[in-house]
Image (tube, rainbow, N blue to C red; front, side):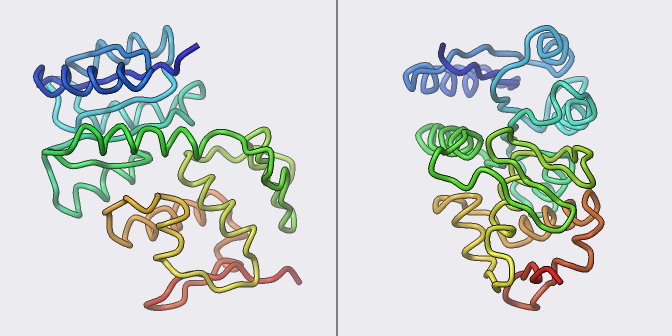
Length: 228
């Protein structure tokens, strides 16, 4: 079965172009021009990914993203935000609400398809990867795509999971922000390093042990300390 993608975009010309390119790439696509209708449809039949415009009539993209992240069945739904706003603060707000990626209009449809494919790849299990990674009472299970702290599940977004996995596999090593961006967001990602900082903060909030175990190396990157 092809992956199912919902596009929530009120500009018909943009929605039609994105739909055309995604269908040609082999995806099943549904379009919505407002947040309320999209939310009702998602609650009935969730897609594999959501392309979400920030500026929508009625319920805007940020509110829809916040609601989806608050509901158990859509907490891990991959979300790419589409918006005409290019300011860094707007990107940070989108990431704060739980978006996995962010692309600013005008954008290349081919670049968007590449971002979609890259996000799907990051969410798919890799048989060559380490299946489970342990750090004290923290367990990351790549096969089940789950994180357990003291045997209780911690709900992470797709990007947060990928970032935590990258850091846990390199515990004891200093990793640069540039290397993290390339590994977790992809070589074609044009966002700034603030993107990483936002996700690191989210991980520390959701996993308290990281507040002391994950150190920030000023002007360079991060280091997950060796276990004592």
